[in-house]
Image (cartoon, rainbow, N blue to C red):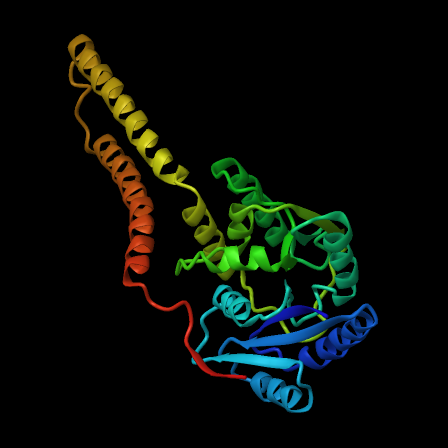
Length: 310
């Protein structure tokens, strides 16, 4: 019998887990009729509520349930990697515990791989119903900018909800970088992928763990991790401003020669200094981001630390 490993990163999901477990068990029963088994791998990302306790209760009653519990909160990217490492299935699927990734789509995803020859089946939301307008706007802008700045193909509205063959899982695990951006990694490793579209569904319970600031930092991870365009922009900005400065100097000299007394005045000097200082700091900041990522990678720290597992 074939085995599908369902990987569920969980951080403070005590309210959503009972709903998710009930639904995934229902889907597992459907697969069983097709001679396909499922295992459920919950990754507790250092939760502060009863998430781990609930998962342990499931594991005690259901041999299909396994878990990895982190020593602290390492983030969803680390949880995804840990789940993929623990997966033993011929296929692996990444899912959120809040039911925004409908388990009911799994049979259709599995059929696409088995019958249509795809290596993976990914999902994307065609609407962002229930999401703040500003957040939706910046999310769409991120996908547009990322696709222009890098060679990685990112689909607008793409979710982490994806069913993959073992060969693709192994390819992802071979990328052991510390600063991870899974959506970019999916695109970078390639493989033949089918996209399933569905309407956005709101969380079944609990609150989202993704604030606007966290999403902004996550987007920077993606840009820095899969594009060197910001460095090129900084370089060209420096060249352009040097040219502007040269033209300005010539202009001031000519005006001084023609009219006299026009090259003095501290306000204009302060504005010029502030402008160029700001541009220099911006370029140094961009360079610093890349250097900081290189520094973190050079330490070769583990992506996560597991406190206990089953």
